[in-house]
Length: 315
Image: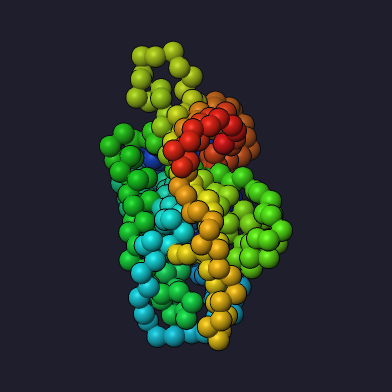
């Protein structure tokens, strides 16, 4: 669900970003020197717009997701080992992408580079902390320090690169490969992951992969490599039909699903990738599309290591 909120937010802000993955690119759409836009009302407009969007999405998330579970007082939940840490990568990816999307908006508003970076990073953490606060008051979940650590790491991955290199040389991306489950597991898959493509793409950790995509030209400036070529290293997992174990119980404590025979395993990937923001175009609409698309890793030929076995395919 957090991934779904981030994707919606990224698409909403994409028209303001114009494909800039660097704080040091020209401030979007102003048409005037950056320093001349300081006295305008844009900072207030952006602050109000982001606050309203954050508030509305949290309200909708509460209605659609949390109201179906009983409310409790604030409590902790140690989920650091859940889903083989795939959900933690989802938290980090969400924080990274929110900071990436918000930063150009603050630049458009007239903030200096470090100020816009601070505002975007803080906004990303505030938003995800709001979701965590709702977790902390839900009977089904709880406040997770592991989630907060992942949120912070994702924000720092973006901010640190801007401060060190003034660009995003290592991008955090997401991909999904839908799969069919055998008949004896389909009922459990429907309970956990939903029934349609959109639900399963966002809920089914067995089908997701998170990638760190290194832009080769940024580190090998004298090479003849194309500027858009990345080398992507991915992590995924499979065989998961429960957060910690492949089992489930009803409200009365009766076991409704028990499959310890299914091995839960980690997957490692290596594949080429495209940095869409480094594809040159003079069209604003195309830059907007490329900016939004750059949060995703599209399938390319690559290698997969799982259970000590190496194989090739499209990942």
